[in-house]
Length: 505
Image (tube, rainbow, N blue to C red; front, side, top):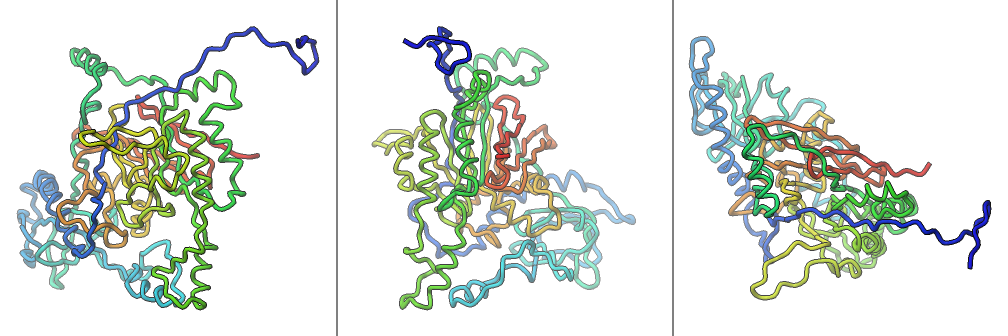
């Protein structure tokens, strides 16, 4: 029997009683808005996607423009509505709705893809598509034709290819449309919390009581948190930040923490991994390109199975396996993850996770409805509901592509613009690969999210934006963990955010 002795490492067992901590739980309902059918076809034209987008967003833009410009006059002339771009007449003050197209000489073109197929040295990817000589042309187009836009308002409004807007102005002698004002669809209607789908019974009773009060109290934090991390960057060795990843695991599990901190960590009810869990391996890419001269069979897209390295995926699987017994995980793919390249990216196949997939969804039997899985591999973009809030998240490709169109460095401003354009991937399919939808454009936001986050951004940033009808959206730019060591915590009741930084000093 051990004998307690002051100043000795050998101590007798303590009689102190410790309370058992349980992980907090939240309501979680994933949607399948961006899930594609198993049989996908790519023979159809991509132009239909723009017409679908214009058809869906033209009515709300027209309502906003009509309310703003009804009876507006310049030099005694009243502005008139024009149905089509080709109906614009020189000298007439009018407004028209269409799709923005920006003709940019520095944008990628098919010749770059041909050079890659023939193993010619392709140009390095550009940080921006903007032309320093001012050669970019802004066009407004619809099913009838295209019209070039000019004017001072264009410089102050964030515009990219694919967004739907209304412009008011007049056509000059050169055939260009001089813009006086611009209107965008703005935020779509936003459902009330817990009303996006079936409300839990206990919340229904509580909200019925709340409806009796004229002024509802401001939400107060209940302590529950949602953790969002992005850009874990698992590589072949992970020597650069393996210790940070281990500390991240210990933080989420509450290991090696004092009881007070453990109680706080137990309130993290779900982990969302927002893209780029696997790091891009430049050595494998160079191996593909340099060794092709010795191959007799041409490899499509330069893929060589001998260059595949399964180690990063195994590291990710081990990381998830350590977390899943304690905390549910939602996994969103990113640009460097083993998923299809074009948006919407489909869930990473569970075969990539031989250990973690036991926590995933079981195969459905006939007559069964799909239930949320503890380990939920989802699409990119992804939308769902957490604690009654409508949530929309992406792996970051949509913001990264918009960034190349504009001079601004404000990532939150780009996220806000997407919400006000009512489109979470406006540059698809022009410069952002996407599936050629024929019946509907899923990138159009039919309802306004309460929380919109984007992964793999250079730094953390957040803001709350407001809509004309009382909509409120929490925007979060989630930084790359491999670069910053930061993980974002979101309060499930107030949507306030905090950041935890894991660093090795």
